[in-house]
Amino acid sequence: MEAIVVGIDVSKNTLDVHVHPSDRAFAVARTAEGLDALIAEIAPLGIHAVAVEATGGFETVVAASLGAAGLPVIVVNPAQVRAFAQALGKRAKTDPIDAAVIARFVEATKPQIRPLADEETRLLASLVTRRRQIIHMIVAEKQRQHQLSSEVLKKSAARLIKALEQKLNVLDIGIDDSVRGSPVWREKEDLLQSVPGVGKVVARSLLAELPELGTLTRRQIASLAGLAPWTRQSGKWRGKSFTGGGRSGVRTVIFMAAMVGARHNRVLKAFHQRLIAAGKPKLVALVAVARKLLTILNAILRDKTPWQTA
Image 1 (cartoon, rainbow, N blue to C red):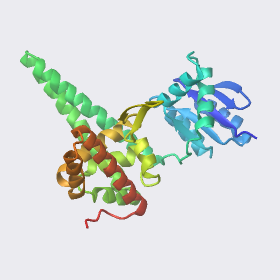
Image 2 (cartoon, rainbow, N blue to C red):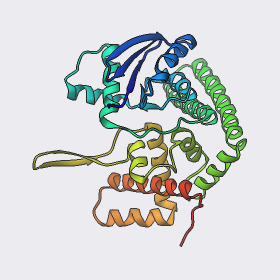
Image 3 (cartoon, rainbow, N blue to C red):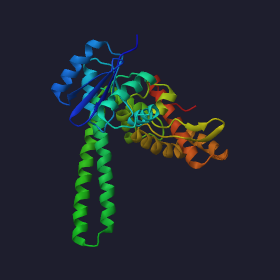
Image 4 (cartoon, one colour):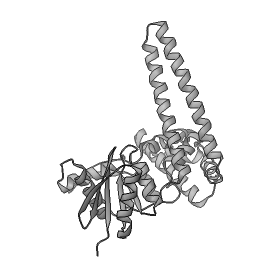
């Protein structure tokens, strides 16, 4: 008997639902009442997985509600679902079709079902995301300030920058309170920061945006971060290897830490120098350092053992 998989396409106001293999389709409102009705409808089915496509934040409450009801939730990568749809020849863009493709994608690929992040993780993820947004606003406003010729407008830009910096400071305090208020978070943060090159921003960003760290294999965690190499290949032709996909925020902070580690972490520095001496391009060497650093951090949280130098 085929496993029952539910695909859900999330929009601002509606949830389109497809049950595989029965091909039953229906829709509910993206409201508390609609979610209650959805859970009541699918909970008795004995489903193997319920898959929700990541849609810029609309899916968060949906996934959290389903997970709280004890359903096996998977949040799937929209780019992978689109590629799967194209492989099936389904180019039409309608929500019912999307829900069916999501269900078939999960049934075909059988991704690992992992527990959702707890409430503290979701709160910290929101704080870290907001922090990044404010930093982008500060950078953009500073760039505009340099282009202004009027002193009045320059002072206006300076006041806005100061206000944004104050908001950033408040967020940093909130992030610190969230991390330091939880013994589990405190232990994980200290373990990550034991690695030379990993500071508070990197450690807390990883805790918030990569809660799977320490629970997966090195290949799985590299794939989540978009650091697993893949190669374009057809027959005997073999193209260059690339990295991509995954969680861009995680990849950014890992690269930041890798650049610092390649200069100040004895192990990573030696590894980086060996790759450069072997003729590897600088960017390729840095990607390898980032992947090695992520593997180290994954093992440290898995084993609950701080960084140790030989």
